[in-house]
Length: 310
Image (cartoon, rainbow, N blue to C red; front, side, top):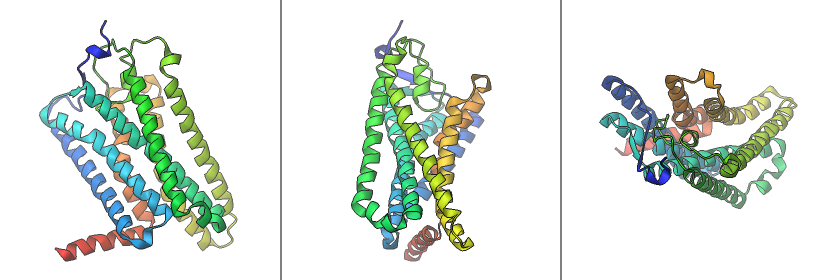
């Protein structure tokens, strides 16, 4: 029986069996990652350079774009490397580092989406207190708390996961390192002692989810009481992008990890993992820019300015 100390590397899931399909997956992943880098990079630049966008909503959107960039830069480069060079190896240290950073960015995204929900709640349900509750200092503190919580969460989960004895080989059924796949290799029987960090994490995630649902119930109650149709449309237009991003993020992740074992198959598992880990960072900038005229105008100004300089 081997343990984790005797494992020097893990074998990631191969994206395809044939060389042609591997190169096709390489091109697909490269295209999605470039779209994510371009979209999130434009949002970060537009918000940072546009002084009229220095508001709480765009401040948190900038941090969301940073988490999306970090998330896709953590998983995709290794997948691209493995597809191009026809390999599956990732070192033990590389796997732990990939899991740690992925947990940071995905946790930060979830916490930031929760904070952005609070921003929408205050702006619609308590507009007179908006400047007080979401001043620049309060926004900075909330963003710092989101990243600090994500860091601590990632540190605990990574340390807990890699402290488990591993005796069921080193092959992971995923193209990147994630906790469920590593736990399948564990031979530990003390689940309550070993997985208490997971219980704490799931509990905090459920608290965020309940807060988001409660906030949107209050938001919709207020919006539906707005007498003018134009006012209701304006209020909904500020909430729909956030609601779409939250739904995409949660639905794909929950379905990927909580689906019935009878539904499991290598191709379905791969498609779902791409949906929740690679696609959202590429789609989020598009969702926000399509519905927000200010952001769309700022991005367009930034792009035309760059073209004029060249």
